[in-house]
Image (cartoon, rainbow, N blue to C red; front, side, top):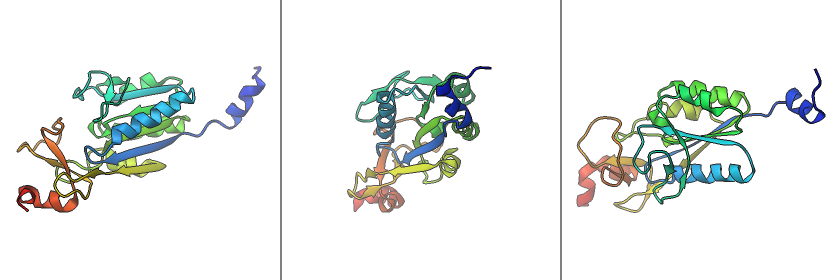
Length: 198
């Protein structure tokens, strides 16, 4: 079998893939950072595929949209397994709101990275109770790079790493924006409703 000289190096030393996780609370700029990295990959003429959970329709049915209204086209998927079928020969895979995927996303991201793809993931590291959120701890553990971004506490102005829920709902997944959540520092998060009286 004849192999073009330009491809010999690629076959002998296949490109190394890796996983990057961007995590933090709501309103911390996770999606904005994800979009920035994906746009830079596009400028570098890399083939990019972007996915989000189909249940996330807060801003747009298809696009990933940050709180400051920066957006990028994506493919909504019902399950993590669809991602493997849709990545093809791309170089970079972007995932937003990864905490909404089940734990199979961990093996899927590992598979993609093992096959030479750069995988960039954004998601909430903690839920509204301040507990690790879904698959995110496992994704952070297997990632080569983890970036934790922070918001500003709406009550005191300190660094915020918690998403405080304003509604009484106790279900873990409750889609919403400033109508349901606000960013809080550890102290104001722990004080709960009392924090507003101080």
